Length: 531
Image 1 (tube, rainbow, N blue to C red):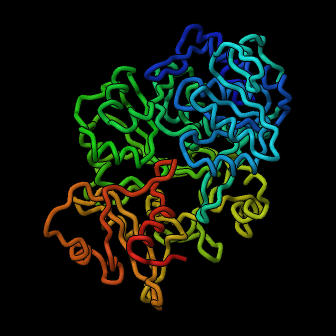
Image 2: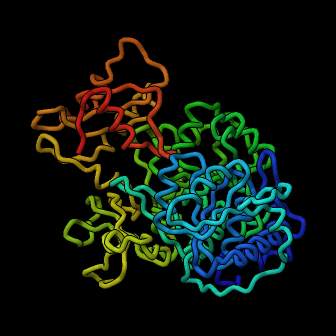
Image 3: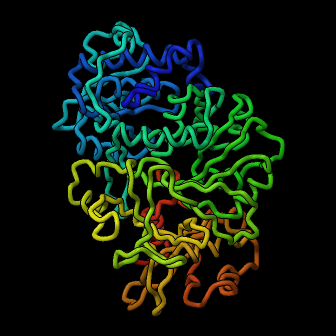
C-alpha cells in the first residue's frame, strides 16, 4: 500500500474488487463498488453540510453493512468518526456529544428519534443525516439518503495526514467517567498492517464481526477487511444472543476468522453446543477484551482441535492488539493461566515496578506500552492524558512516551507475559496483599460457577472491609457449600465472607462485567458500602 490514510485501503483496492461483497448480515449486503461510491457521496454531503477537516461526526447505527459506508464516508470527508451505542443509556451518548461537539449525527430510520433528541441538546448545532430512503416531507430538518444519493460518486480530495485523528472512542475508566480515546490514521495503519500479515488474512477470508462498532475490538474486523478485500460478516443482536443462530451464520457465510470478546466465547461455551465438525471453514479464533476463563478455552479447543486459538491483549489507548499468544497446547487444568504472549511488531511492552525499574522474571509489575499504536490521549482531558501517557524517567528509552495501562503482569522464563489483573483490583486485607482476580479464578474453577466477580466492601460501622463473591450460577445444586469449597483451595484470608448467587452478572455495553452496577446491586441487597 502506498497510501497513508485508512480510506486508501478502499480506494487503492478498488480495481481488484469489482463486484465483490464487502459486508453481509442476515438481511443485507454491500459490495465494494457500492461502498466506494456511497462513501464518496456521503463525504461530499458532509462537506456540503459544513463539516471541515477534523470535525467530529457521531455515528448512531445498528449492526448492518451500512456502518462501513458511514465510517468510510466520514473519513473521506477528512472528519473524525465517533461511534456511540444506539441501544444504551441516552445519558452516556449525551455526555460524548457535549464533550466532542460533533457537527453531524449519522443515523437510520430506527434510530432517528434518538438522533433528533440528541440534536436538540442545548448548545449544539447538530445536523441529522439518515442513511435510509424516504419520500421527501415538507419542513423536515433531517437529510435522508435520497438527497445524499444525488451527490457525486467521485473520490474527494483528502487534506488529512496520517497523524490526524480517524476516530474517538468513548470508554469508561476505573472512575466510571467516560474518556474519549483519540486514535489517528497512523495508529490504525500501524496496527492493521501487522495484523493482516501476522494472521495471514487475504481476500478469500470471511471475518466474523461480533464486537459492537463503538468498541475498539471492531477495528480489527472493519479495517482488516478493507485492507485485504476480505468479506465482513456482521452478526446481529439475535445471533449474538443465541449460539445456534451464530453458528448457522458462520457456516452459511463460510467464516474463516473470528476475533471475539472473551465474554462472548465464554457465553457460547456455557449456552451453546460446541460440536466437532461444525464451522469447517473456521481457521483462526482470537479472543480478548478480558481474561477468558481457562475452562471455557479447554471446551473450545477440545471441540475444535484443528483451529488456531490466540489470546490477544491491548487497551483502547494502544489501538487494537499490543500482545498476542498462539495457544499451541491444550491447557492441563482449569486453573492454568494463559499468557498474553509477546509484544506485537513495532510495539514494546515493559513491566515496571512501583519504583519505575524493570521487573525481574516472575516479579509482578505494571504493564506499560510503547510504540506507534499509542493514542494521542483523551479528548478534552489534558490531566487524564498526562497521567495515562507519562514519559519514561530512566532506562535506555528515557524520555519516550508510554501508556500506563493500570494492568498488572509478569514475565515468564520464556519471555512471555502473563496478565494478572487490574492494579485497582490489587488490595490489602488482614495484612495480606493479593489481587481480586486470584479469588475470581478460584471461583471459576468450581463447575457450578459460570461467571465470577469479587468486590471489597464494608458493612456500615465496620472497621475493616470484607470480600463479597458474586457468582453467576446457571443451575443451583442443593447442599453445595460454595464458601467451604473455596476454603479448600484458597488461603483463609482470600475466601469471600459472603457469596451472592445470581443468574448472571450485569454487563456493560461492551459485554464486560459491570462492576459499578454490581456494587449497586450488592449495596441494595446486602447493605455493603463501597468506596
